[in-house]
Image (tube, rainbow, N blue to C red):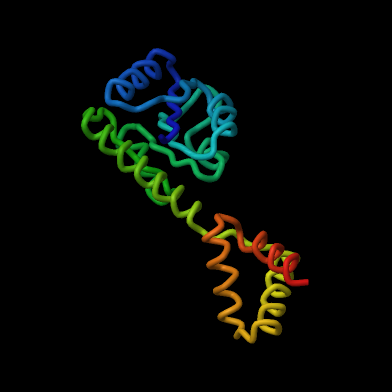
Length: 181
């Protein structure tokens, strides 16, 4: 579930926005009236959406956007004249007054985008440090020398064994070295 922070200068407007989103099936993590509150809430989360107005109690949307942690997207709700200045800033804009359907569709689009990015981050292979690479290479060399395997065959053996045993390649290489030494 995507974290949503509503940041509007008037607390009643922010609570109404939260209620609107909750009625539409979204969970709102926090309601804030200042940029500092919003940033404090965002720092505790990995990613999410900040729905905000043009001006908060202590900063403009642009300063808030510049200070948001990586992984957060901003939905700016403002009048058309203010939206013209933020066209090139990687901010999703919604013109006021808005239709509820437009808001919900926009939040859904942003949530899907964040979920996609989250999946891509998880699927990215973990980078190994030099010690782990050396350990895997040592296990491959041992397999190549003792079992007359090519480097590809040794790598595939370690890879397949690690998948079969639900262990990482580093742990499997350690087991190969422990058994064959």
